[in-house]
Image (tube, rainbow, N blue to C red; front, side):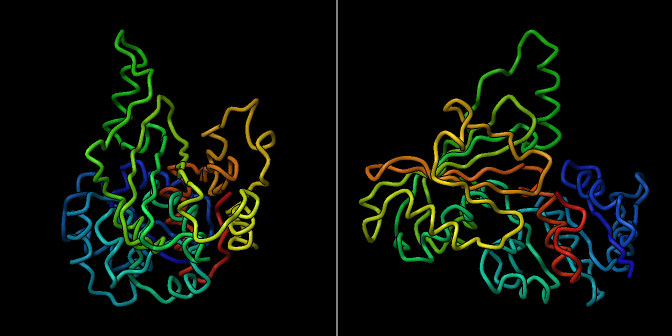
Amino acid sequence: MTYTVFVDGQEGTTGLQINEYLAQRSDIELLKIDSDKRKDLAERKRLINESDVTFLCLPDEAAKESVSLVDNPNTCIIDASTAHRVNPAWTFGLPELAKDQREKIRAAKRIANPGCHATAFILGLRPLVASGLLAVDTQIAANSITGYSGGGKSMIADYQAASTSATQLKAPRPYALGLAHKHLPEMCAYTGLTVAPIFQPIVGPFYKGLAVTAYLHPQQFTRKVSPADVQQILADYYAGETFIRVAPFDLASSTEGGFFNVEANNDTNRVDLFVFGTEERMLIVARLDNLGKGASGAAVQAMNVHLGVEETLGLI
């Protein structure tokens, strides 16, 4: 069977990547909009309603506008913006979230694609909240280091221009220092935490790759556990998941001479989860490609689940 797919916002970083994933597939017919009609509401409406699935790769307000154009009840919208991620009328597009999440995605016509930082944070922390090891009112401190492609076309252009100029962007750059990052609502909603984490992201001088690190102290736990115990909770929660690997509790095998490689999952849809530390202090680290499982790969995975085709189709 062939499915028709439209990418509204096909010129953006996420839209281009989705098109690359889907262009290789024989079961997908891509509907394309002429470049001079990208802002033509009538043309966008026509293509959205002709599609089985439309991906919205747009700013929040433009994504809301596109949703208002839908009048075909059979069209599934997968929104990569922040606009609908905690809207109860929308389904969160993270199949590994819970045992019944795939069923929800399959039945939904409105799917909100998770944010990149949020995906890593949620996958690392949700099993600990679900198991009762972390109380729901625990305040977590976490940071994230990510490649500059997460900032979209404007930031990519800045870094590419800087690479050939005297003013080069060589150092990591912390941002969102007002501690009100736009991913905080979904971080709470889908971990089960009722208190927003202290979350501080950093953009690095590399194109893509992301790692979220959460800092845990034994006083935060509801019972005494070792790092190996925490690793086992994660491994049990994600047993059988194709795209999630929980690394053994072993510093040597999880690092390169003691250094952690943020880019190791680039060009894949995989997430690696690690537990580091001792019984006195621990880290949980989640690593992914911010353009893969953090954006376009996740959107395609959600589409596959919704359509009932092989979940890994077109993904690595």
